[in-house]
Length: 292
Length: 292
DNA sequence: GTTCCGCATGAATCGATAG
DNA sequence: ACTATCGATTCATGCGGAA
Image (cartoon, rainbow over all chains, first blue to last red; front, side, top):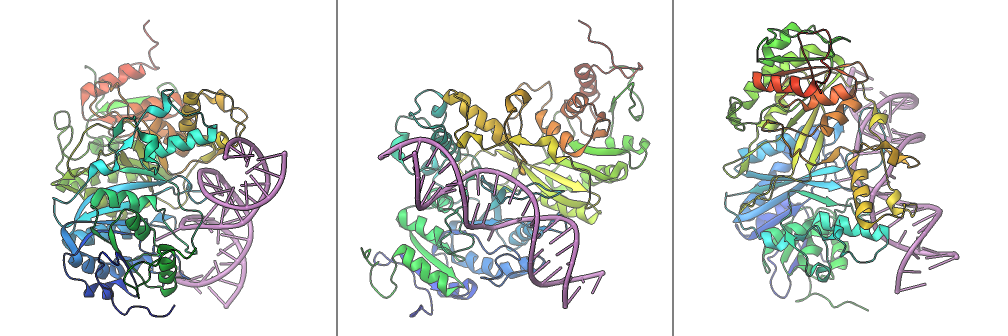
């Protein structure tokens, strides 16, 4: 909890991951312009997580967010990408419009709204209401500064079809279905399982379960999500930024993929948890070796 | 092609399906207010289908659409629902904002934007672009006049979960996966397969393949889609409206579910095809019996 | 080592109740 | 009237413990 850096510095080979506690719209001013290749973030949703964050009223959400967008625009490279995970909540029986307003405000500020990916959450929150089903999807908004941006489509190709053609390994029904869902989603870590399978490009719908084993953070999004976007929109050594780093999933994915990364969170305790998770010690020249 | 009715009349028991050729914003004036329980429609997309429809420029889409919305608002019952299938196209590398603007305009006109369902198209159109993946989803916007509306949630419950708990029947891998996908989608026709399974409410993400054998219509959406919404938001005998009826999928689903229905399309040839598909003869008291 | 079962746990939402 | 808090509802997932 001690020794929080007062400002952020650019990562380097010796210290590829930097973590800072504070307000991203202020801390980012220390970064040079056009220094970040990719921003992947999931800001606090409106009126959610009140206990840990301030809690932003839906009607004030756009006004609250745009200063962050402004600094992100400044530090983002011209061929860089900004991925924003967000979903409007239901207010008085209606979906609130602040996300729509946010997209329009971003365009007025000069951003291009390139694409909207759908994150289909297979294990969404349960519940039953007289006028509504469970909400099982969120938006992943892609913004860019230019029409041409860096995109590495081959890095996210996924195997197709073979789960149904008899070459499937002899698994339990549960594992077979899980295997199938992994294939459908386009996510999976064990590349060796994919040898000999035909690869295809994914679509703009991503199937992923939310993270259950929450690492002392109320809203971790699964590491496979930033992993996918980091592979798609950056190369090794590129700098990735998450201005609302939370539990550090984006940083962990960036670290595993050998990208440099900066994580910022208003909550100093979360920053400390992230440093532990990533084994980052900002006081040293290089990451601390695992203790055991 | 002869004998097009000049106006639409309310369906009745003898003639539960009515089809009219013309501009829905004009023809609907013949209907009494608060007479329709559910509207399910997929209007021409912006700048698409220019050969068959007029082709609406994205920048003028909201202005073009709102007169239809106005008449729909008039004829819709106060506890009725309006389901609008739409998706913005990419223009100059960006997603166009006319759908967002449309939602805001609908709210200004007094509609409640109750929910946004996602239609995940499993077999979306193939293709590859340097800066974009295949678009495999569309919006299904739900609008209402009041916070309280008719909703029959039990009518769309689907079996769940059992693939994971060991009670699964001893099926081949392919059948198991197919079974699972049917469960996920919440759609399925063979009710007998569901006996003894636990039912659960679906979510707001619908998994459906697009219709392949398009019936001489450039953008048929699958009949299972209107089928689902008709079961969810109407009861037997209720009146369903599709002001952009196209190939008649909404009418066919309504007919099969014993709802009354009105279909309107600007294209008289499509109306004739619909009458053939549904075996509707507006000149008689009752539907014509199949010829063979 | 596997497989199976039970259980806690969520970026939720509505309606009622209380201030 | 308007806002804040609480209880009830519900299900996919991952974990631990047991067979």
